[in-house]
Image 1 (tube, rainbow, N blue to C red):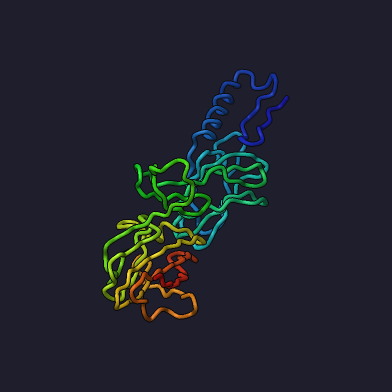
Image 2: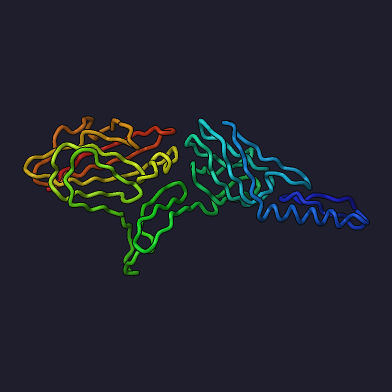
Length: 295
């Protein structure tokens, strides 16, 4: 019987009685290909277009590797196309520049969208792709704030929180500061999703949203993601208001609830500002904002 090749890993299956005297070479090659499928790391460079993984019988190729590191610069969402009719699991790191997601898929099946800067474990049944795991975390010790991304959504939370195990719910990290709002306030999105200034505002202020001292918000968000933030400002008898919004130091004009930006604050209470920051393209954001009085 002549040799054939396996469906998924494309390794050579020696027929009975074939390759007398050389079967050891084929077997060694097969083991190398299996090792590639289990531990192989393949770099893929996208050239602002869809990329089809090479798929070969009995020799090293791109599609057989366990890990795919995708680089290059894209100006739109691009497809990473895996072979059809070949079930397999991949770990895919979208390390492209430009801020766009990639979609890993077969030529005709449904795919999985991997946001820029994130790593997903995915698998295919030979037609469609599915998510096996899509979680990335910035590790922390007990009660440190961490960012966790699952299936494209980023959540800020406490690492190893010390909580009563019978309590269940959503806990939003909140920064509380005995500070008077004035000037430009830097809102570190990796530190909190809610910021509360408890001293009376001293002047009108602007808010600059960024990741932290060394990380931009733009680098943390993929196109199509939304970050929600709340800034709570204590007001004295003379009230002030938010008159500027920045993302990574670049001015953005929000769309305000009701159609008009605030021109005043509300005295002797707490004004709560909410912001929905939507990344619509690389370094491009739409901000939906509102002001609500609590007294």
